[in-house]
Length: 266
Image (cartoon, rainbow, N blue to C red; front, side, top):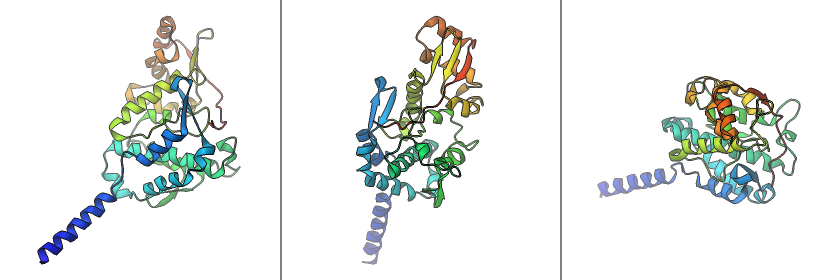
């Protein structure tokens, strides 16, 4: 009898443990993205239906609540792809949460003050602490020696039209590298944000590459400079072979375009 009792208790504990295991498909977030993110410009960019999304803010809060239940010990036991997918989704979801909390507005910058930018507002609870968006990006994702992934700059979004596109799907561990590379293709192919001006012999690039150029100069993914990064992806900046050759030979200057901070609303 005792043996049966202990077996039942053990089974109940196992079931509870399984039920509370984190969903690495990020299904709740994925469903919201599919519902409210609209792809434009042949899929190279996206916009968010914030007015409709605001009515569904509770569902987003439920997903974010799930993130808060992951403690540092559990997170540390995951493989790197699970960790990075978790952090990218968390950053983007909390950014949307911040926008919805103040919507309607014209720009994420309207949320900040002269003292505290929107990226320094401690409205996020993660790993048992109150942190801000900069904490996720700079202290966790960009921490030297942890992920060393320059392509995070083409997937983290700031709810602005100058941002890389917010995907209409969640990042998932088994497809993470594919999704990173796909967003890179979309971002560099969007001629509003990145392009080659042949007349001026100049790469006209997003200011993202000005702010984070150092991450593309450390040898990760075989990029040892911004010039080598753009040379490797010359075919995304121009369709003309002669111009691509010029980029591959790193004969072009780099100029950074003014960032468009207007809300990526639809």
